[in-house]
Every structure is written in structure tokens, then in C-alpha cells.
Image: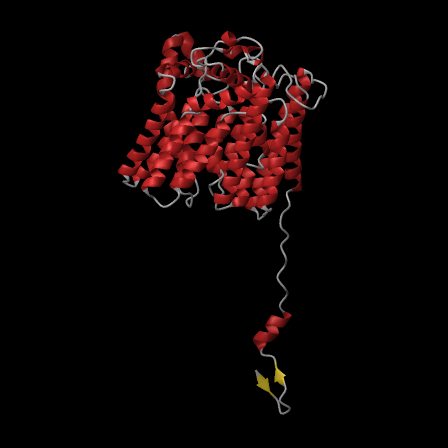
Length: 453
């Protein structure tokens, strides 16, 4: 600063540079209008298929309050395919916008997702007949029967009429917690299977929304968590519109990971073990969660914690399954021999059946796919973001590897991978999970008609 004889203060060179320097440019936040529009269109098309039941992609009997004309098989296939593709592209587009700075209000994401969820939950299930099987098993249990010994065909009409032919003679492959869930809905529905299924749809939608709320509240990136779960059109179409029990497994997974990320203590380990055990008593595939949460503890040398969590989970499974007995596991053994098409094992099964025989081929597949899954999980784990906690990264990698390598894999099985994915930092593997779920949904979305259910 310099002063002349009249005491006038002159700006310094640094001040002059500040004055003449241009103001920083305001970077406009990306607005993925096309991605949001595709997402909305995807959910709308899923709802349209459900509202236009019966058709090839829904149950054979409409369970809907919206009486639209039934779609032809060709139109139903076309609309469902478009719904899956648009939902996939919309999800990828919104994630890309998030990566480039888009930051919508998580509360808006939740409200938008909740609106879509409530709409599709009030329509006929789309993409699978699993809800009809749930209702039948629940009705058997509500009548005092044993769903692990009694098949839907033995139950008879009107429930058996909705179950896919492939599952008519199959007792329940779900755990006791799932059976009690189904029985509660059947108690409300009584002789009206449409009401039982509607109760199951609404209950599943409620679990989906509670899970989304928990993810938004506990995730390091609430926006990403909202985009990957509650506002995810692909999951809304696959999980909610399909009414699958995998939503419950995913919810328990989120809860278990939440406690695993907190300060280690005896109470948290007991809760984690109990949650894993409950998840296994919904679908036994949730045992992967127990393995995934124990692995980081073993690597860190926390053997006692790993043993405690595993023991509590095992004890929970034993106690709950003891209500029915060991025979409740027998339908699982039969189902484990099935190979879905397409999968990594389809060609192997066909060639092996001719060269080795069906029995030997089944044995080889059952021996090979677990180590292949573990190897792929290891490779996927190495590609997760470095700042991703092990209690999130390992469950994601193992669940994703299971979806890719299991002989029998359905799009809704991916819920076990989506739950930890919503808690992880941004990474390329998320896009692969979106694509994998979409491809499986394109193949297995026939409403239970034909071989799939």
C-alpha cells in the first residue's frame, strides 16, 4: 500500500489482481432428466403389466383393483422387456449423474420410491408365481398342516390353481420364519388366495421401504443408498412387483452389517448372530452372509468374535427349525440339484448328461460351483473400492459371486448383493450388478408360466 501527499490510499498489485480477476464459473449441477424419465417409464410399465392381468408375465388370476383389459402374451412380453431395459438404463444413468455431482434430496428419493412401491404392491405380482407358492404354503400352515411335507397340489383349490405347474408337487423350500410370515398372511386371507397374496405384497413392500429408510440413515452416501435401493426402478420391478421373500433377507442383511460396523462388543456380536440366523430361517442362502461377516474377523485374528457370531446364528437356526424337524431340510436337497437356464452350468449339464449320465453330472456340478464362487468372490473383492469397509465389501463380493456362479439363480436373488452395495462407495462393480440383475430379469420374468417360477 502507498500513500501520496493527499493521503490517498492506492491499491496494491495483489489487490489489483483480485479486482480484475474473473469470478469463478458456476458449474451447473447435472440433471439426469432422461435417466429419471426412463426410470419412471420402467416402473410405469411394470405397473401396467400388473394391472393388465392375467397375462404371460403375471399370475393366471388377476389380483388387482385396477380393471384394465388383459394383455396378449406377445404384448405382455414386449412391455415387460421394455420395463426391464428402461429400468436398467435409468438406474445406470442416475448412478452416472451421481458420480458427476448430482445430489438430489434423499427425502425426495425416498418419497418418490415409496409412491412407486405402493402402486406396484397393490397390483397382480409380475415376473414370478412365487407369491402363489408362498400363499399355498402359508395356507397349509394356517390350517395346521406341515408345508415341508404337504405340497400345493395336496392342498388343492383355490390356492393350488395359482401355483406354477413346476411347483405343484414341491413342499416348501423356505425356512420356518418364512413359513410363519406366509401363515400370518394366509390367516388373514382365509379361503381367498388373492387376499393372502395381497397381504404378502403389502408386507413385502413395507419391509422394502423400511430397509430403504435404514440405508439412507446409515450410509455414508445417503443419495447413493437411495438410488441403489428405494428409488431403484429395477429393484422395485423385480423385488416389490414380484413380491419376493428376498426383500426380508436383504433387510436382515442391512441390520447385521449395521451392527458389524459399530464398536465391537458382546451385545453386538449376539445381535449379529441372531440376525444371520433369522435370515437363514427365511432362505438358507443367507448362510453366505454369516460366512462373509466372519471372514474379516478371522483375518483380523478376532477368532472369539467369529465363533460367537457363528454359534449364535447356528443355535438360532437349530431352535427355529426344530419346530418342524430335520425333514424341513429335505426339500432343499432336492432343489439344490436344479440348474436354471441360462447359467454357467447349462451347457455343462447337457454335455455331462450325455457323457457321464445325469447323476454323475449333478454331483460334479455340486462339487465345482462352490470353489468357483469363492474364487470369483476373491477376484471381485480385490476390485472393490479401497475405502470400502470389509464388513461391506466381503458380503457384496460373496453374494455377487453366488448370483453369477450358482446353478440355480434368479434376478431376485441379487437382493443379497444389492443391500451391501447400497452401503459401499462408488465403484465399477455396481454397474455390473445392475446389468446382471437386468439380464436375469429379462430371462426369468414369465410370471411362472413354463419352467420358471
